Picture (cartoon, rainbow, N blue to C red):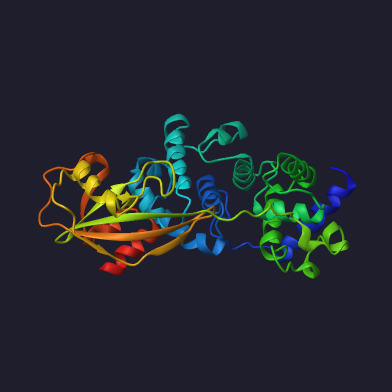
Amino acid sequence: MDADAAGFANRVLTWYRRYGRRDLPWQHKDAYRVWLSEIMLQQTQVSTVIPYYRNFLQRFADIEQLADASIDEVLQHWQGLGYYARARNLHKAARIIRNQHQGRFPQTFAEVEELPGIGRSTAGAILSFAYGQHWPILDGNVKRVLARCFRVPGWYAQSDTMKQLWYLAESVTPAENTAEFNQAMMDIGAMLCLKSKPKCEACPLKKLCGSYLHHSQAEFPQKKPTRTKPHKSTLMLLHRYEEQILLWRRPPSGIWGGLWSLPEVDGVTAVELWQQSFLSMTQAPKLVQERVIRHQFTHYSLDISLAIIEMEQLPEQVSDSDNYAWVDIDALTNHGLPTPVRKLLSSLE
């Protein structure tokens, strides 16, 4: 490490030892807990993650318990955190660790990066925090600090920008005290180098920061050109018989993958055909239209309208019975449901 990089690291470490966060519940040498926190923290704030993290550990205290559980139970404990592919990959990885690594989290970068849901930065974070190994990280906070400090052009989706950020992360990450340094960089990004209104006067890097010295903090990191967010709509079907409703398990990929939800069709005219195909119902549906709710995803918005179909009797069979189930309303909490669907059902109860 050259003198400039050493000076950078020393400033970061000195600040951390005085101001950094040391009371986060996953800050110890247990690889499972570090791994779980890193997955939960992807695209999610610390304050949101902490209660989910604690509740998840109460049920799945170690890798074996997570691996032995069903995906339905894992998704149930994940519901509300969003980005459900993270939970599916966590479960898959736990089973790989149980079956191929004797239940012990691997300690080499290649083995960790091969696990589902773990990329370069997450692997480096786990290995540095759990095992004290020398690996750089590049989560959202660290990207922002480096992009501002070194005035890196472009946005994160561009390969040249990411190559430069990784080069910088590798250059400034010290071989010793790596875990402290990595945590410090995340803390500086989360506490000082904010997306808007950064607290530059309190930052230990201000004398090295190109953006601060050139008064260009608002220009870095550069943003991807904005596009109009697409808008979609769907009609959900609530088939209700006495105290039971029909739930549909969504495909494993795509939005809300693997969660239980309500069947969906493109519009009212498709309801009768859907019932004939999946419930063998011949009578025309009696629909009661409820209010429309709008749910915002990262890349588009979704309007959900609801059609309530009161059933006089249960159908004799349901096509694709593995992915459909009649569930008592009182037992809905035992099923992982997307947040807007759970809100819809709660409003009807």
